[in-house]
Each structure stands twice: as C-alpha cells, then as structure tokens.
Length: 217
Image (cartoon, rainbow, N blue to C red; front, side, top):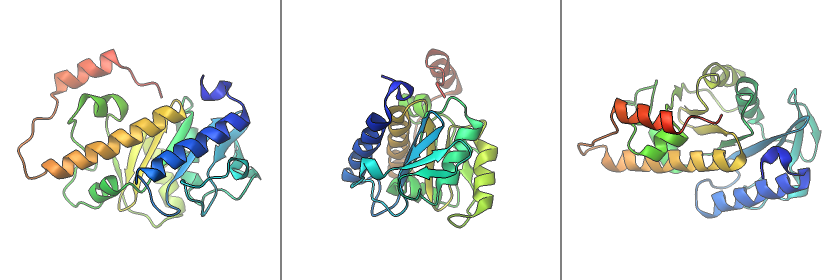
C-alpha cells in the first residue's frame, strides 16, 4: 500500500516503526535525525528534541503545505530541509535526514568531489542514490542551508550536508529509508577501501542500470 493510500494513523505508526528500526541499528543517536511523510494537505514529521527510537505516533508533528505547524508537538528545527525537498521534488513522498556515522565521516573529508561525493561502488547504490552532491557547511538552522538544499534538490533526491549528514527523498517512506541505508553502507565501503585500489562501476554499467531501473522520485 502506498503512503498516499494509508490513513493518518497508519502513517504515524509507520514513521515510529521505521524510526525505532533506524535507532536500534545505530544509524542515528540521541535526538538526532528526522523523518517526514507527505500527506494530504501537508506532511507529518518527527518532533523537535525527540529520539527516533522512542516516538509517540500521536505526538508526531503535522505541517501544512506552507510548512506551518498545525498539529502535534513542535516539529524538528530542521523541517526546512524537508520542505526544500518537497518543494523541488513533487513526486517525493517522504524525506529522511540522519547523522549516520559513516556518511557524516565522509562529509567531513577534505578531498571528496563536491559534485559527486561517493564513487559508484555497487549497483544498489547507483539504483537507490545515484549522484550525491555535497552541500557546503552551514550552521544547523541557518536559512542559507535551506536555500542551498533547494538549489540541489531539483536535480538530486539525495544530498550530503558537509560536517552534518545526508538528506534523502523517496517516493515512499520505505524508499527513502532504504536509500539512506544504502548511502550509509556505501560510505562505510568507501572508508574501508580508501587506501586500496578499487574497481567502481563503469559509465556504461551505470547507464544500463539507470535504463533498467529509472528513478521513481
């Protein structure tokens, strides 16, 4: 069942379930990270200061299409990251932002390509993430960060914030979560292999994957 066909209650439960899975597997810690799902009239979002491992579905924030808080607890202060993705990607059904360790580690490296941070090491990375641009560093909550994400979001459904972490949109919450996890696993591979000669996928192999598995968002 797609997110758009699910009830508000079912979507809230789904956010809490995925949040706990993400937290329990160490993909985010403390009160870091946030999840949102597009619904009729706006989107649902994890509240400010909340742990993804202990979400109360009934208290999840509700925002209207303009990003105004209209229900539940106050939303995360990083809601503008989600708004930027939704504005630029009308097919996006959900957005995930994590401070996952390996992705953040790569975002702190000085010698990565800002146009495409990670090499195409696996087919699933190409299929679920594709090209990953680096957004230069801004302090958390800085309005200029929203502008920078918005500029990239029209061409990329996943971006990496420098010294911060990934922001990933998906056609559904499952798609967004799985793409974020694939990004994290590829970042881990990249760090493991950085001093070893590697064999990334070729441009022809990448083109064939994109032909067989076109982007959904």
